[in-house]
Image (cartoon, rainbow, N blue to C red; front, side, top):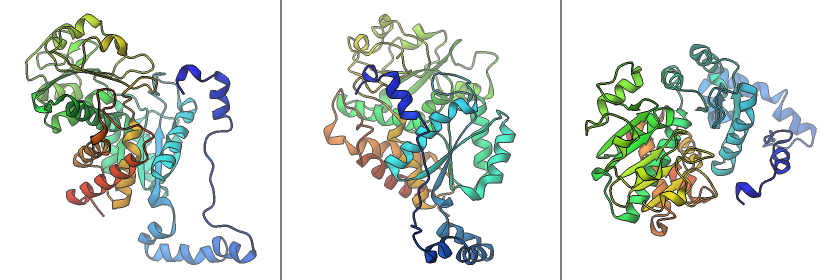
Length: 388
């Protein structure tokens, strides 16, 4: 069903009362059940964990529980709408974790945007969960927050807006290249947007061996000759733009092989005509792509968006359920770059024999995806030596 066929009543009705509940894994139908699940039996388990803390992994759900954490500062395309307004999104994320990876998760929306306060809060709550999925935290604070949490917590931490997006974008480019017979090492990629997703996409594409990446923010191409760059953009300037370009979108697009839109900026279709022959165009802004896919198709060999009502939807749900499932299956202490690369390759491999110009990644609803991603991520965790 496309978005146009969904009414407001459908939407509000689907959220009324929330989208989550807690269900018991052990039935309580008689007094014996009660004495096992709660007092007095539970005291024996608590004493055992006190004496041997590692037993909490066996006798509680914490080791398999993902905390979905947001401060509501960068929610979807809505911006800084606050913690309470972000909760329906975090509940939805938890529904996806359960549906696609069988993982329990709990939405935690925090009424603070102070990085150190968020870190302190999650450090104090660490015994209650096994992994942290950061969601909808504004840039550049999101980079500092993720780094500090990874240092402070001995469990997997991933900001999905960064790395989930990066994984599926790499998977989609791999799929497009399989269809068109191209090599990522020969491609120059233009990324419009230097926020959380844009920075992470640039980094994973570089790790995957892309020929060159040109990144633009609202002021134009990020390059070493620009002033007033923050630390994140200064690092990008040093590692990207090997072509030495300066200027704006016109200069960036000329001769480029791939365009990846991760900002709200619109792209004139005439710019697509200046790209290399039969380019790849990923217009991922939601709900309005940077260029309408029907216009992009006049110039591009492959076109993708983030929407479900056009072909080639690039959606984070292809990545994050399996990534966290694999990390938790392996008992990983962190999520490494190799684990992200392995996830991207696994996504492509699911539909490798079924790919076409309008199907460069499997459907987000394909039940094979999370299992394949989880298996690949768990193996990469073991190879990287981050398994506890």
